[in-house]
Image 1 (cartoon, rainbow, N blue to C red):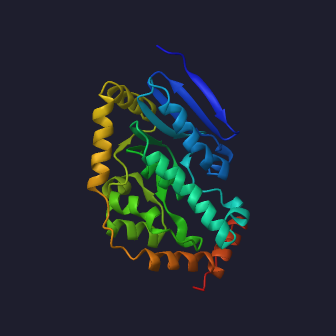
Image 2 (image 1 turned 45 degrees about the vertical axis):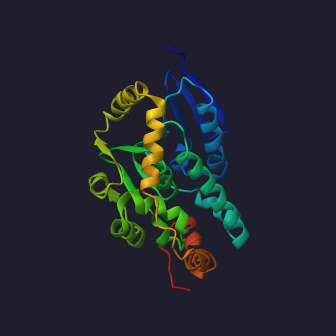
Length: 269
């Protein structure tokens, strides 16, 4: 059995190789593993390292600290990273690149979810092949509470996974869903007890590691092709709606309210 090896990517991301399993650990527990810019940027680098190692057969994503998988994007950075149209574009491209890279991984990927899985964290989980969560986990996309609009490409994986009706409910209500609701929607694959999660995922990894890599990658790519959305979407109209969100007073108010720990006062402008 190969020895476990850890490598730090900055101060908030850890890559750990343990036998056939590559662990990508979001290590920002003081902020419930909220995703900073540096953490987004580390995702493709860690995947590159795992995929260069023929011994790694499966990749698992987890959050440090036991209270959250990923609580979302680090909103404290939004004033700098998403305050202008150009900055929003650069930030969104970075996030999309990381999500695309995760989706394109040539190893099976599992999101091991404990606690909060919100916003950008849910996007990361959806980019994985499977999601295994504890009974006490919570899921949400709180964009409507912050005045944020999501681009069509960002929403396509969610709609493909849960369908349009549940996707609308998740986005429009912006509320938290428990694990039972998430399973009903098809948002997660399995629910396990708090004390069972580590062993359950470890057993899944052992099963996957025994399977043929080419068969698994073929299955991944074929399913993705089958679930592709139509090419006749009005992307221009949808993009304009997103730009209006980021240019709005409500977006600025949502950021301020979050930082001031109060309820936002939105006015639809």
